[in-house]
Length: 122
Image 1 (cartoon, rainbow, N blue to C red):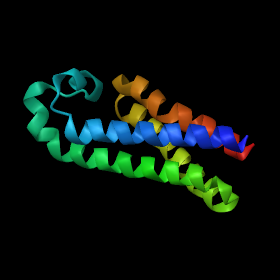
Image 2 (image 1 turned 180 degrees about the vertical axis):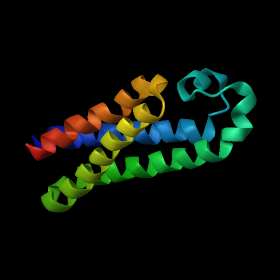
Image 3 (image 1 turned 120 degrees about the vertical axis):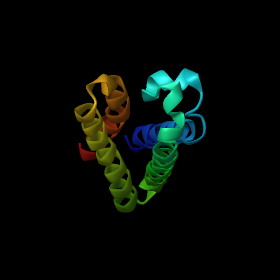
Image 4 (image 1 turned 135 degrees about the vertical axis):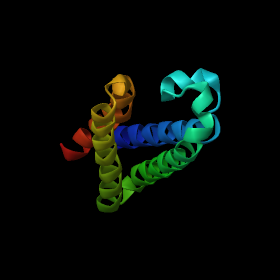
């Protein structure tokens, strides 16, 4: 089971890092405006939060990968990966509560980490 959790944790971390890169560096790309609910005329207004949010996601992603790799040391790896996953489950809930139109993004943010958290806790 640990191998599956590690693979899922690394995938989760990679997804967070990729989303962070999109948020920080490609938010001006009009193909992503629908995903981020950005209007073309608002890109400069949202630059600061998208740039910072992207780096938050990249750091969370690094934490997930580190936790998954550290599962070889079960207590430390489990704690770090569980914290990262539960944090993103909560962030997914907050996202849908703050903007219902982002329900698909909220599911994308919370589903895999919820599965990993359940596997860690069982």
